[in-house]
Amino acid sequence: LCLCALVLAVSCAPKEKKHFISDAEYRAQVEKDFAARESICAAAGVNLESMGLAADEKEALQFLYAYMPLGDIVNMSPEYYLEHYHLTMEALEQMPWGKSIPERELRHFVLPVRVNNENLDESRTVFFAELAPRVKGMSMYDAVLEVNHWCHEYVTYTPSDARTSSPLASIKTAYSRCGEESTFTVAALRAVGIPARQVYTPRWAHTDSNHAWGEAWIDGEWHFLGACEPEPVLDLAWFNAPASRGMLMHTKAFGRYGGPEEVVSQTPCFTEINVTENYAPTAPVVVKVVDDKGNPVSTEVEFKIYNYAEFFTAARTNSNEQGVALLTTGKGSILAWATFEGRYGFALCQAGTA
Image (cartoon, rainbow, N blue to C red; front, side, top):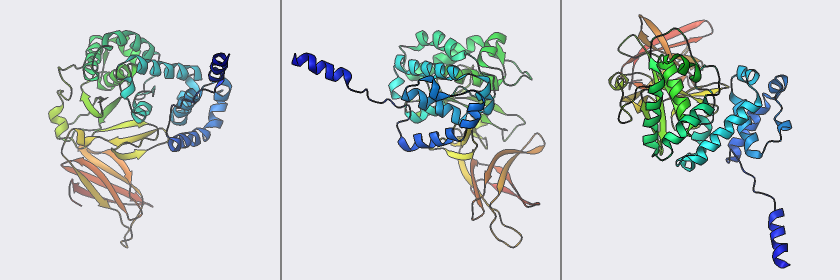
């Protein structure tokens, strides 16, 4: 009788609340950002309260809706994003590295559906079914290499004007530019629970071109790979030499991201971060913006690389109250340009000098 009473008491005890975002302060920020969009979501017929969500499901969907582009709110249903969350958690449960992924990397580089400006599709479902059996017994490092080999089996590089095809569309055509290839590869890595992001150089410093590729998080470190261009090891690609002389390599992290990288800019949807030091010797470019009386000015500052016979804006940031703006770049020349109340100023800067 006592034993039955004890079992009954345990079975009736409330279950521990499972959080997708365990950091209470960050969770509160997400809730605030989601609340600011709640009227937009309501107009699109999105009502998370009516879906009977568990705490972790609700937090994951609030995170996605707080920062996704407005078109994604309208074009895809809440059930689509909920299924996406379930697939993410299933991948983490099945893959041997699943328990090693920190929450920050999970939030910003595994869960997000969107990589670039591609159409959203059901690629995570397809990719997980294809890749999970193929990488399940591997180390995280070897799994990244294997995923890239799989991507190469389906997509090859072909110049095209189409931007930016969805992962499943790339499979159907079997060709892509570097932007589509890296979108495709990042989506495939995320499908098996590996944090991944698309890295982009807006312009090479030494030649009239640009490029995009992938990075994967492995045991606390980011490694790069040429998307759909498999090599026997990571951190090796045809662009090692160009990147080592590059002025800026950056990526966009979904939502409010607080990682160790330098923040270039932040929008309501993403945090643009600087990853140049992963590839090249870097140094800060520091400029001070003042008016004609020498008073500091807080305004937008553009950093421009000379490429394709023009000064191309590679990054935008804001000068602070002291008029100071900083960007960490590869070593070389970069033009800083600022405008304020109809006036402008510019200076040719060398990285590592003020």
